[in-house]
Length: 135
Image 1: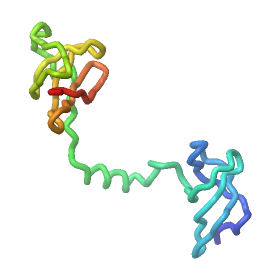
Image 2 (image 1 turned 30 degrees about the vertical axis):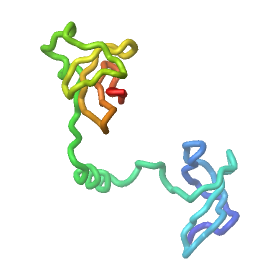
Image 3 (image 1 turned 90 degrees about the horizontal axis):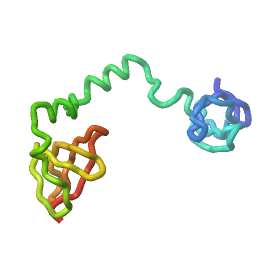
């Protein structure tokens, strides 16, 4: 039997980001549904565990259902390519998929995808960025 309204229960606090003591605010069909944190006063749905702490079987099933994400590694994208052939980035220029560009802030990058009609995905040493082109 769940705790009654007004009793204390441990729950994941969405504001504090920790399992803390909460006070039960609502119980529906023998299930605690709403609580408020005794530390910060935040009100939210009852969560017995932190997010992402599902069972191992659930995580494995969820991982197997996701399509394999292609990882684009910066080092492999620039390997064997001449950095001097990189074009300077400018908003007005048009870039193609796979092209080397030199950005004034991010440095040498490789265009990995064309998005919409005026955006490109570029992989830099610090990670991927979305940039505007053809403006």
